[in-house]
Amino acid sequence: MTVIAGNLSAAEVDAAMYAVHRWEPDNRNHLFKRDQDGAGVGAVWPKCTRGKPIPQRTCFPDELSPELGDDRDHSQDCRSCFPTGSRQPWRP
Image (cartoon, rainbow, N blue to C red; front, side, top):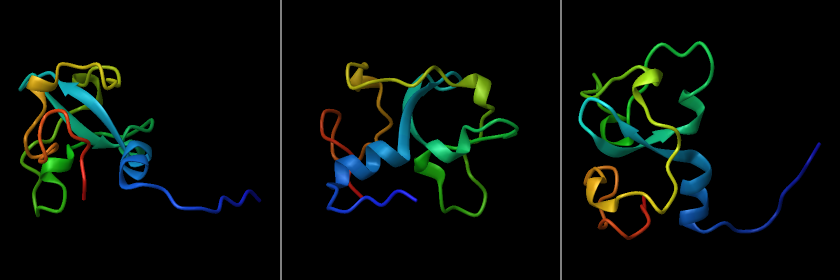
């Protein structure tokens, strides 16, 4: 069993939990939980619709680009997934 001790910043936690993908239908960058992209998953939804009774933006995994890094086009970031501004890290 591996044990990790210490404190992680909010940005480090977010980077571990969420991946950024460009969603083909709306051509925007969204945050998707990493545990959704496993094999056999029928549909996924971005962070901006999580917690809602019926996610407004549901898509198939093959509609997503490969994971994007920080060098992505920040002007295409979804304002709900990235509420603090295009160049600021997402904060809960």
